[in-house]
Length: 443
Image (tube, rainbow, N blue to C red; front, side, top):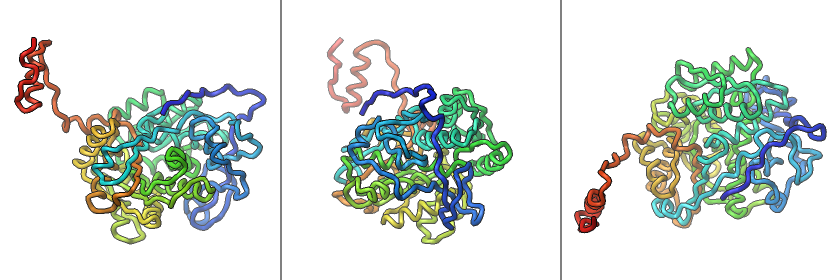
């Protein structure tokens, strides 16, 4: 699916300078507070989330379809005040062209999984940095501007670093980005090119995240996945909205997603529910399945234990983009899987590398390690009888394989080297075909 890119329009006196962020409410105790760059309830330390007015006017299918193909076509479910904005207008929004990635039919993968239909929600081609993190940064950076912040930042395992650096550069904002010291070179380069302040930190992601929480307080920066987390997470819902619309306003039977902090799977469940509550879609809410690498699978282990308390882990996996040992939304992700009658699956590093290859060789999509985890988990779940023959399933692929080429380099065959002679290629063809005549007679 292709569409024209709508470039941002310069500010004019007739347009507002920024969106107004919504107030928030504690997810645990329900206390409400004014809009602010704060993510933790001061009363119970629970997470805050945007408070939407139950009386707000929601669009019809036709109205949504008439809008530009970006995540902002679902604006009424995003954490800003849209009162007084016409259905066909869009205020001065930062990153106005992110979202609406392809939903790719995958019949060969469906055959491998033993289901009726399989689809790939392909955020490996998300604009502009080739991962679903573009969605969450789009909402977070608009929240930052609504609060008058001129500096944004993040703690990141790679994809978020890329996204914050790119979106901040486009918005002419300063960016301070903090990453674990051993991040893949491709993701480091894919961040540095945008000119941010990039800092490597000794330790794992959880060490980096703790540091960023302190820095947000010390410098008053908008750390997108710390003090702006309530607004940031809402961008993930748009992946669910797009899946439903691209399937013809109906819901799939099952959805699989990788889990790092647990927010994506939780917000996917929320997105499907919100569209169902608005009467926009047909079908029952899908079963939700979450995937993690075996070397960092605290959410999967919590699901398997049947308990309520998550046990933090020290990551040991090549799937660095989802290697979060103490996931903030882990318990909520478990609840989403349990409530939807889904499940959780962990896979080895060897299996995730094979998952990358399976996806590439059945769909033509090259994914990074998190996507390999998702595909490998789908294959394991299928083998264990979690899918029905008539199921229609969606796999959420969240990042591009060009960012983690080292993960598959040693698993791929070497390309043969020949002279520029037909007979040498003919020998290769004959070898591939089992020793047949091939093109050996030709010169």
